[in-house]
Image (cartoon, rainbow, N blue to C red; front, side, top):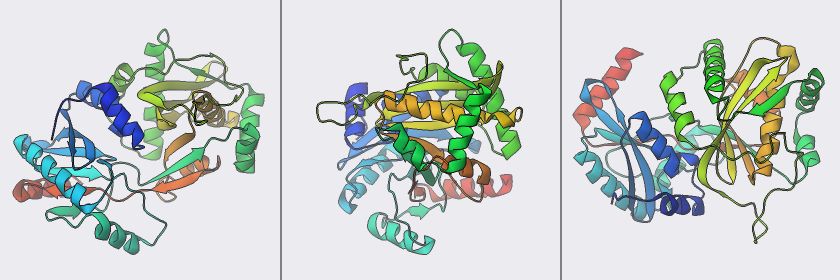
Length: 358
């Protein structure tokens, strides 16, 4: 069923089940502020935040990023699917797309497909898209209590570049309300420069501006980079999870010139690098290394147990992937996105339009 959920109730359920920030209540609020209708559907022990996307010709579809969340089994999934189908048809959606929160083992692609479809997705009207709106492979760094343990797990060149950036005097800081307007401009400028250099397609500027305006800041207890203290811990000895989605906008500069920026989101026990950009100037200063080393230390201070560097792909993003892998970490790989087709005719029009616009 679809029903109004409050912040605390929804986020508590998501945190208990280890959900991505994409299923946090605040992410839904951002999407609504951006102009998209958001619903939250719970049935069969599964819960999913559903975001409505408009398409040309008056078409629309529903999207569930890294969801639905809960115990995945055939009966539960069929019940959630039926509830989502009834709701989507009321809203006139041609199809519903999910990016499942299911990680898959390191198997050949053919075996992965058989494994995923055989275990979860034998439902009529379902189509494997062969791709994903979210990164298929994410690099995740576990944050140990000792900085020496983290440094020793890095590639030797990464450790060298961090120290080189320090010797060059690269300075990193967290954006605050006083500097936010100028920092937002810098963030979008560096993001655009990087996208043009890498051939990456961006959202409209308003998307990033709305995100920065809507998602609250994670408080800054210390304006200087943390000296990597032990993390905040609860009575169980585990890091205290961040109970609502928050953000920090980071910038790294050399002699007053902004060279790198990163937007980091915090939810549960994970900090996630969502968007960022770098300048092509003063590359010898290694500013991005100083920036992410600062982010990692601050994330641990905030109580995070993991730092998600975001997507990696050795073929499409070779340079970015090499940079991220230098910090160490492990790869999480997810299943393809799947479409539930409610209206085959309109879905066919959508696919035909995609082919024409390529």
